[in-house]
Image (cartoon, rainbow over all chains, first blue to last red; front, top):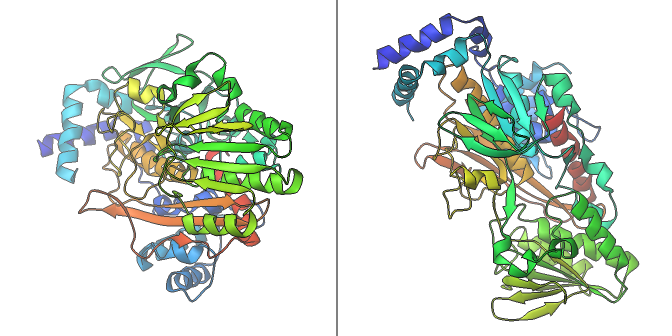
Amino acid sequence: MKLTATILLTLCAATSSVTASAADVIKSGARIAASCSGCHGTNGATQGSALPALAGQPKDALLAKLKAYKSGAAQSTIMTQIAKGYTEEQLEILATYFSSQKK
Amino acid sequence: MDRRQFLQAAGASALLASTGCASITGQAKPHVVVIGGGYGGATAAKYVRLWSENSIDVTIIEPNANFISCPLSNLVLGGSKQIGDLTLGYDNLTRNHGIKLLHDSVSHIDPEKRTLTLLSGASLSYDRLILSPGVEFVWDELPGMKVAGAQDKILHAWKAGTQTVALRLQLEGMADGGVYAMTIPPQPYRCPPGPYERACQIAHYFSQHKQKSKVLVLDANEDIVSKPALFKRVWKERYANIIEYRPSFRTVDIDVGARTAISELGDKVKADVLNVIPPQRAGAIAAETGLANVNKRWCEVGFQTFESTQAKNIHVLGDAIQGSPLMPKSAHMANQHAKVCAAAVVDLLSGRMPEQSPIINNTCYSFINDKDVIHVASVHTWSEEKKTLLVVPGSGGLSSAPNALEGVYANSWAANIWSDALS
């Protein structure tokens, strides 16, 4: 059954150019980064001037800031509370993703 | 669902219905239909397009011409914002993302045939359906409100728009020395802190323009549902002579002519402006399609995909779902549901297994006057053990006190989440 299903899926994927792009994996980090965009804009393209845009920030600086929020070393109204919900690995994925986005 | 089960399910559906394969690989692109263009639906539609790199066609069905935000709409009642400040068009979803928008309503869904019929008579087929219908008011629990014309006199203003503007006019027209009373239904209801923010907004208005007037909060719940310590402190320190709070006042009927709320114990409270926030359940189309299986009110979903447990190929998100523990019915949550759901829909239509460990968060800002704000926040992640989304221990929390900085952040939040949904 498993083999049959795999073959079927493979056949489906192989016979269509439409599927080719749909079948590409969603860009690494995009899903978890999307949990930030409610406040920080799609792909870190932050609207308005109250907050700095996440997109295009240097990875090291962003990661250091996120870790400081997580540890409580950096004071904030809300980001310490949010950052504590993410693992260090997840914060690294976020910093990598946003640093690679266009400003 | 583990990988083996997924492949079996995918294989079985491919074997049973060649259309399952054809819809992916045939000439036509897969088609996702989204019912409801609010915080959940609009965001899901956009992200299905983004993450499929436009290889999935998306149609939104939304009866309203414009998006009007419920968050911030209490500020229209308080007088510091206008409804136009909260009103946005859908044009960018079409222009920037190629999403088709039908200003129509859905009259029937056939989950077996994967088709739906619109009020206009047109019909559509879908490969996957995303239902983000919001809430419907349960007027049956307030018989007096079912009398013709009652709902034009006694307003809810719990869906932002004409009701919001009309309630503001009632407040402006009320003589100084009058009483504004609001009834709050038992939870769960849309926007847990919303009624208490509303009390603050109207008290703020009275404190500036009608100093002899009162705000009376008639709450079916035993205590303030969200941010209780913060709201109590604000009411004591800023609105002590204006706001009166009555817990455990479960409204069971309204005498519309007398502008009187009647509790289950028979207590009657008359007001000059009576504002009834009715009991709620998932939007009507969800129940009609057999998806509202929890207390006949809310839709149960799997939180890795937001697919209904009651119908295949139908996903439900936003206020209409039965939330996981401590998950509020909020705009921010709907935004977060939408992206987990969109990723899963793209994965499933591409023959991939959806991601297994989603992480989402919530932020609710409440304005306690025209500039100071308090928040509640939380982070929720998949628990393989409990098979649901649970709050990450140690995450989340509240403001320490009302502050103007968070007022700036709250307006920034609105600009960003509107952009995330609609641009």
